[in-house]
Length: 346
Image (tube, rainbow, N blue to C red; front, side, top):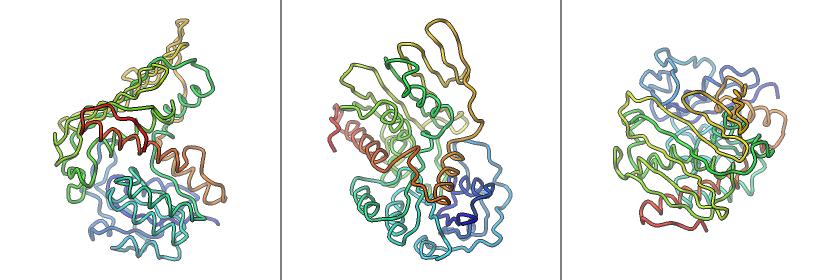
């Protein structure tokens, strides 16, 4: 195929981000868009805001040649769509993923790919029987600084892990989405599931599945029933200290932060206020040179390339590892609710 034809469901913050990324690709073309909001179906995203990035949404998107649908299911049935990209509210991910896989479409779905384990099981069954590709928006796995650190760590360059800390701190995003759905804990899962899950996934991706998790959190701090601030400790048999914190409770004037510090026997790797640095035990300080892009750009370009060339997209993720990270998030929620350490045996 000359170009991979994209059908995009949802034109909020992530949907509009994906739209612009595809628009700039030579190997992709957006042919269809679905959104329940007629204003967005006209390409008007002037009311769309996010917690990271500085996109100018004042100008309408170029909708020339793009078919529009109110229903995502109608878009899935469009015979001209090769890839269904799902960027709608979390509870709707699973029904669209299952329908798209059954329709023989390739699927890229934003995170979290499901709202609960029941939905995850339905996706797993659909994917087991599918002949098409499925990837998710676990963008941190592809984010240049995280990717570089992961590859160096896995190659043994830094030695044994001693401790690790991950942070994802956001301003309050109340009012930033259609029907303010992020602030409905039953729909979004709060900051724990919608945002902190990136670092939970990174912990599992870097270091393997922990034996158990202990999490504390603030429930209903800004949302209705969601865990809006969470701190988790991931328990490993070798005694390493691994923890992550996620929050979206600060005033909306507060800068977004995504940082980490990984201390190993030979070096400490930091993505902090001083930038991306490696502090070696011998006193050398290294500034690794990584591509000036985002994980969103990397993951979508990779998926499009795989679809175009018929190559299974498994460089950054596979379904089982993403599902495993999701199960850890479920354990974190259980730990917050119970106030106890939770063994991960889902």
